[in-house]
Amino acid sequence: MTGLFGKTLFGGLLFAAALAAPAQAQEYQWTFQTSAQAGDNFFPYQQEWAARVKTMSAGRIDITVVPVGTVVAHNETLEAVGSGILQGHFSDPSYFSGKDPAFAMLGNLVGAWSDPQQMFNYVNYGGGKALFNELMNPYGVQFMGTSSTGVESFLSSKPIHGVADLKGVKMRAPEGMVQEVFAAAGAAPVNLPGSEVYTSLEKGVIDAADYTVFSTNHAQGMHKFAKYPLYPGFHSMPVMDVSMNKAIYDELPDDLKEILAVSVRDFAQDMVARLKQEDMKAVAEANADPDITVINWSDEERAKFRAIAKTQWALWADRSEMARKAYDSVTAYLIASGLLVKE
Image 1 (spheres, rainbow, N blue to C red):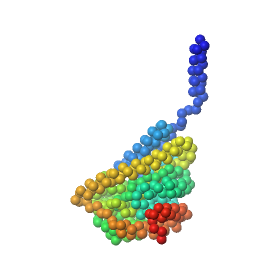
Image 2: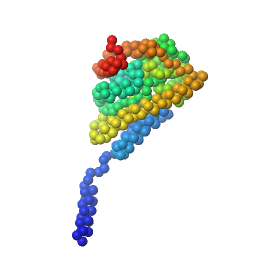
Image 3: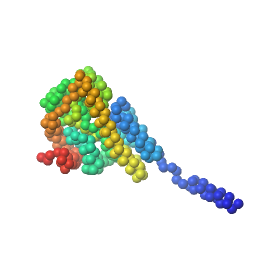
Image 4: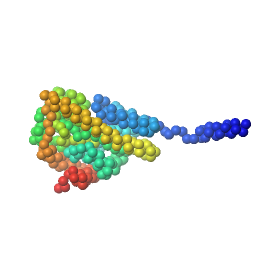
């Protein structure tokens, strides 16, 4: 009887303890909007990141990634994340350059990076992450990390072998610094959303476009009309920032913050590596097509374009206090890393 009583008592204590114990860790259900279209070849990679976060957090974080325009316009996600309409985004910070020119400096410093790893090293180890948060925190947004689609190719319906050939070329370019750099190089940039690039090339509304990486362009059939793609890219390697609502982030336990940090670093490497493989395959297919001519600029022409871009960097640095901080930070890193010659 004593043994039975002891067993019953022990079981009762366990039951009472279970009732008194705190509930299971809170589940977080978030929506992140991306600047990618559902048909972009890297959109599934972003969804896979969300699935990994769910696995790594044992289901405590459940993120749904939705395509561009699902909740708000592509250039409205900063405010939507800060206000809690969205809980996070994948975006090019230069979309928000109208709020502060520093977003353009950090989001797409035209001609600065020739490889994603250079930019990752600056963000993760060269002061970039702290600078991003200094810029974004006042909007109620926490920067967690960055990725990239890689150095972009350039779409063109006419052969462009160097800077001189850009003169008068009517081309699509994102708003902000990118447009101003191409204008300084002699082109005639227009502001069109990425969703209109295909039809604009098809109808001859534009001659060329700064859009995205070679494999995405190729998969979307852009080279039917832009038969003179430039690769490797000479101009743009936009940042893709992964950010979330700061108030939500600040209340997360440390283990979940660490899971998010590690998962974003992994996502960055994963996306760049996979898109590079797809680019190599797409370039091989294009080179085998007699109707497509892939053009690779010489080092001399690339240097000419970068010199033009650098003049615009300096002009943008004077547009706000944060833009000056971004300019000083990035150029100091480039010089210290041997990626830019001090003048």
